[in-house]
Image (cartoon, rainbow, N blue to C red):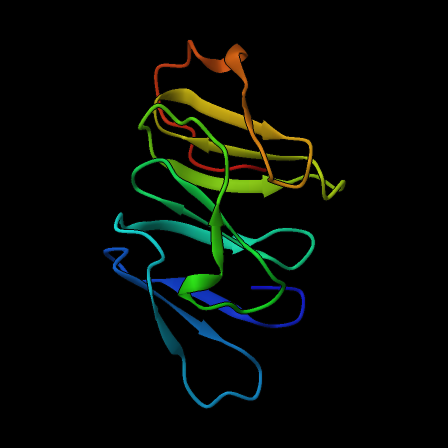
Length: 132
């Protein structure tokens, strides 16, 4: 849920996502922006939607608010094929983290334009599921 009351939801198999905004009478379906299935979605501090897919990709909307399939841009994140499960930001909108399979953790310091792997967690023998 965004701070303005908009919602985004991912289908159970990740084949599509749906959006809803206050005043709409129904949820609006959207195709996924990539051939790989959608894993997770949410909002960054600047009210742009982020999306992760099951192949380790991270995508950011190129405009604020609810967006359609063509409004996502891939970001530079070398996940080594491990799926990214969550993205979260600190109180500084430029600093964020993406986590995923096999202890993968990435950090951005420029609002999500580029990401660098945090190598200090490489020895964790498990998935990282959520950014808090």
